[in-house]
Image 1 (spheres, rainbow, N blue to C red):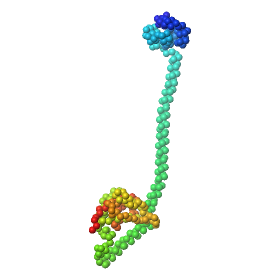
Image 2 (cartoon, helix red, strand yellow):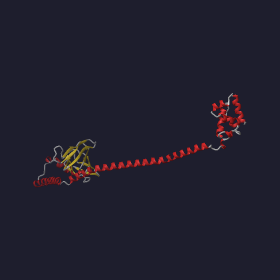
Image 3 (tube, rainbow, N blue to C red):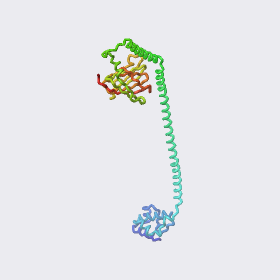
Length: 315
């Protein structure tokens, strides 16, 4: 019997415990307990079990297992010298195989996830491109229709002829008036001079700046500021002052329509600025106090005309 076995047996005897009772307490077979008391550790299943049985035995009889291991370390087998039991080796191999299988699954999973994400992104991009192309196809006919309508208005021979006829009549009227004045040779009395004609000879309208669709003019040498806008086809018209207050915002149309006029005017004499927005400038005519304002030829569509009024005191 070894010293550690003797010490454990003495402690059991002091506790008045038989091997059968100790077996019930520790759940260790009686023959293994006897081998522990006799120090016959080679008869136990292995070093691990030898140390486990000593620990449980010591705890059951009220001894400190760590103190026992330290005091009798020269007798109790060390786990460092034990080879891994065969059944534990099989468990380890099984665990390694399971871990390897699990590792393969985890290695494949990120690749599958990345592939799914890429496919999802590709489907989303393809869907967006299809929707964009469908929208362009739907909008294209509308744009072509609008362009054809504008081109049709520009090339309408009836409207062009009507415009030329109107201009010819105005020119003939001016020539007749000039001939009549020349033939009589009489000077008109200042009190009988037509106010509109007088304005045309005295007032000044200067183009200050023109950039893109925005043009700025100044009106001077007059105390009146009446704006008249007309069209030979149709155009959208906005009339407002420098404070963005609108006086007119509607369509002008030269067609035979009772509800839509082809000319309108507004008296800006009490305003400092007049802002005129034309939806189709090519066919529009602007007059200030009866005098035609030469607006830029381009662009032919939308133009913003600003006229600054430098009001002169009445003479």
